[in-house]
Length: 306
Image 1 (tube, rainbow, N blue to C red):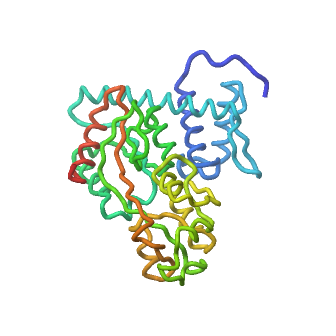
Image 2: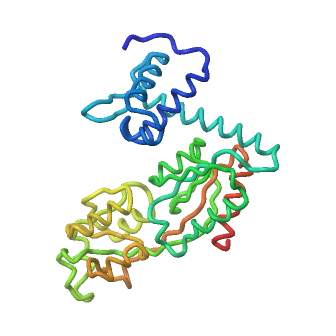
Image 3: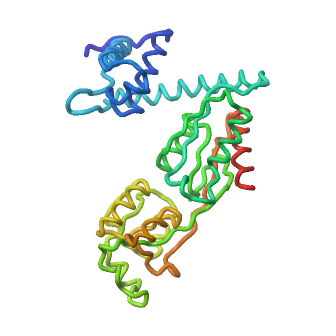
C-alpha cells in the first residue's frame, strides 16, 4: 500500500472506522466480529480497507491464513485504545455534572474468580446496577500484566488482580483471597503415592507448569525450586496440563473441588505445598476516578466487607 500523509483531522467517519477496527482486533478477526458489529464480513473488510487508505498504512493481514496485526496496526490499535479511553474520560467528567450515572465502565479481572466463594463479584455488580442502571458495563478476563497496563493506560477503569508487586501509579484495595495447592492428576505417577513418599526431592524432579510473569505463583515455585517445564498464562490452561497427567501445578482450591470429588486430581502434600493469593481492586491514581469508578469501587468493597 502506497504511503500517504496521515490524516490531519479526525471526522465522524474516522471514529466509526476506528471502532470497527477496535472490534475486529478484540474479536480476533473479521468473521468473529460479525456478530459484535452486526454487519457482514464484506462490509467490515471494506471498512478496514477504507481506514487503511485514510491512515496510509497496512493495519492487518486477513484471509485464509488468519488475522494478524502488522507493526503499524499494533501502533494504531494502541493509539485507538488511548483515544477511546480519553473519550470515556471526557464522558466521565460530563457525568460529574449530572446526577444520573451514564456512560461505560470497563473492568478486567484475572481468571476463575467466579468459582471462588470469597469473591463476591456478582453481588457487587448487582449492587452497582441498582444504583447505576444506565451505565454500560464492559467486562474482560485478561492476564495480570495486561490488566495492570490497561488500567494505567485508561483502557480499563478498574482491574482485579492477584497481588504481587505494587506500582506507584496505582491504588490497591484488597477484597478477597484464594488458597492455592499443588495438584497432579490420576494419570500422574505420584497420584497413588502415600504422602510420606512425596518428598521435596521427588517433586523437584517432576515437570512443573506455572506462570512466566512475576506473581505469587512464581515466588512459590522458585522457593521450592520446582523446574518449570511448561508456561501458561491462565489457570484454565494450567488445569488442562495438570489433567493431562504430564505436569504438576498450583491451582485454586475452589476451582479443583469437582476434580477432587471425581477422582481426577489430588493435592500433593497440602500440609506443606500451599500458599495464599490476595486479590485487590486496582485503579489509577491520576486522573481522579470518575463517579462511576468510585461507585463500583464502593460496591466491590461493600460486597466483600472491607
